[in-house]
Length: 146
Image (cartoon, rainbow, N blue to C red; front, side, top):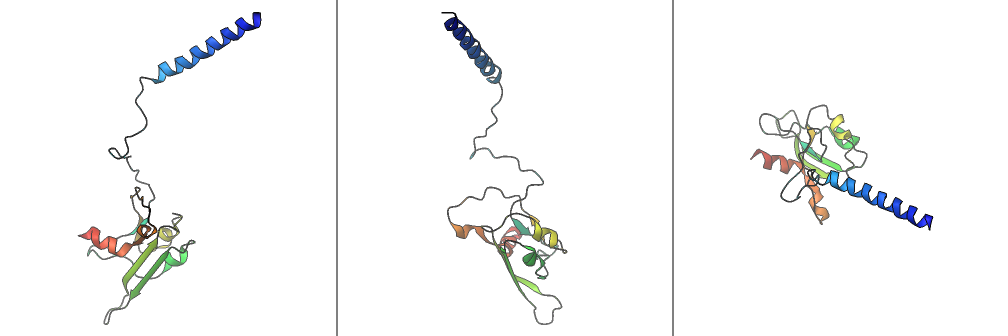
C-alpha cells in the first residue's frame, strides 16, 4: 500500500512540474511566423544562387574568361561569348546556371577576379518544375536593369 501512495505522490509532483513549465511559457510571444503574410528578415551574409553584377553602363562585368565555369565542382555553369568586330574584348552572350546541380559552395564567386558574380538574396525559390531552376542570369540582369 505504501508503494501506491509514493507513486501517486511522484506522479502529482511530475504533473505540477510540467504544468509549471506550461504556465511560464504561455505568456511569451510565439517564435513562428504566419508564412505567406510574414517573411523572415534576410541576413546580409545570406548565400542564395549567384547573379551577375552590372557595371555603370548596365552591362555585366563578366569578360567571359570562364574561370567560374572551370571552378565549379558541380558543373552547373555554362557561359558563352563572342568578340564583336572592331572590339578588343569578348561580350557575354549566354550565362546559364542550373540551380538543381548547384551546391552553393561559392567557388565561382571566389574565382572571379573581375567582380562579376555575387550571391543573391533570393531565398523563396519554390517550384514543382525543374525548368524553373535553370536560370539565364544574363536575361535576369537585363530585367533588373529595366
